[in-house]
Length: 359
Ligand SMILES: [Zn+2]
Image (tube, rainbow, N blue to C red; front, top):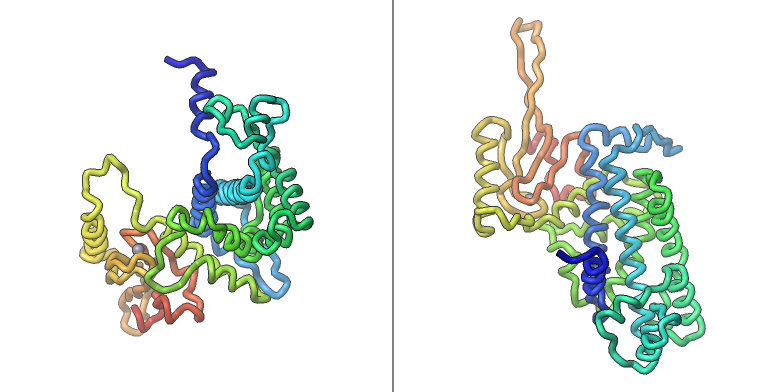
């Protein structure tokens, strides 16, 4: 058994410097996206309470649930981590010592200045500079024209967004009691973070690794990230549209479903397993029909029905009324209930499952 020091050193060696683009930035981005998109799905019962009402946009929400707090926290922490690594990767493109600190280690400092490679133990001793220092350093160098303003000027333009994200992260990290309000999180991400994210993932060393973080195109043709950005260019916060897009994005990131290595069913058979599950719901009377899913396009979207009864005084009989209560995909997990409508702007892409003519 290794002692504690050796254990930690082993872990540290995994973080040895590597070519730009091979750090954990895009993995953090994917975790952040998955968490942000899940902030709607974690309100299956009380999400309607979070609708802003009236022109004054007063907020009548119940306290945010632990699940919301978890997802919003994960989103901010990982989005900040992504931006921090991305900014440092630009500095390292110029010189390692612009992003790393080795002034108290003369041998390491000498090797870095001379462009010599470090051994694993020396790599572990290199400390990365603080994010605020990295950002200020980067903006100053861009302003001086020493770091290409044409390529990286957007960092300086979006400095306030980066500082705000870092401030949110610090409040979460250091005090551990902070939760960003549901609508504020949507606006921060849609209006400020996504546009910046789009520029960062276009950096050459990230652009070729899009599959690390981006979902496959959705069957309905909508791109949740693009659409959410578009909504926040409009004057009104469209709660329903953003919520639907987040749910589409959440399911898209799960497509194809991540399979446990312990699952005995071959991945090629997951389709028929999901189709069988949806058909079984229809056979049992729990689903009125099965449709193609707007995310994965498989015939696995169960249209779930419920009924209510009422007394007909004319016929003196009890009558039952059936209505669609929810839809749920047995393959990619896309789901929504009838507390959320399909916004008119998306009805050419996604059927209005609750409309009488489609029941
Ligand atoms: Zn699906």
